[in-house]
Image 1 (cartoon, rainbow, N blue to C red):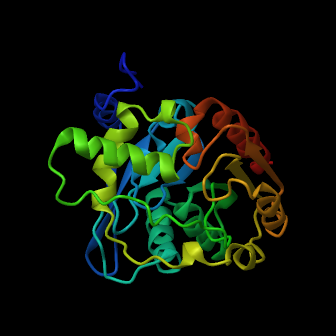
Image 2 (image 1 turned 120 degrees about the vertical axis):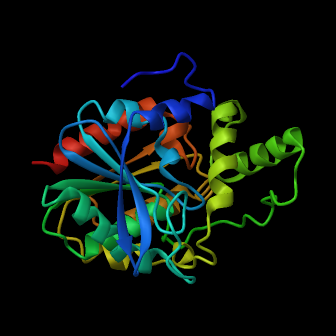
Length: 284
């Protein structure tokens, strides 16, 4: 995969996307879900978070595709995929995503990684116990009853001035996604500005519920977790997070230092190091 000279510029998104191939699956009638594919090797499915798209993995695709075939969907109601119906949530999205995954994989084994809201979707998918699933990795998982108050998020609607819009995006990114101002570069702002307005899955409730432990009790495959100690959802409550994680029955987990919620973007190197350990272990 070619790498642009400035991997922090918005043009990086177009360059990365130009290297993928696209497939579409259908759910709930004729609603289409887009899947992007990179690389060759064992299959790895990556699920984005809420208000996101495949771009949540922009700093990981080049690295992970060197040893894996990456399949990254825009889940229904996000990004470039259709919204099949109103009232979707993690539990109702999971069967649609799993159906699409099994279709594109055509019987191949796979490992599954979910970020934030996508981790909860992945948890529901693992609970369905697909025969070809090898392991599950949760990244900054939602559904642990610890969501904070983000009422100070600023709306983007009707803001047409570019500089003002960028400042709103910067504010929202630091509030919920990236814990350090120096990590909020032009690429992060461009991604947030593109994907957040495309989020049509409204009133998601499962992410706020303390539900992941009960789902985890049904998993039959090895599961792992990665969190950041500066994630605003858990900041100041790491002891409580550790207590919640202990209820998930994970084979192993890591809390990365100086990492926020979007930790695979903020500290991609540490994320890759931890993830490779878990992916290797999950294939044993």
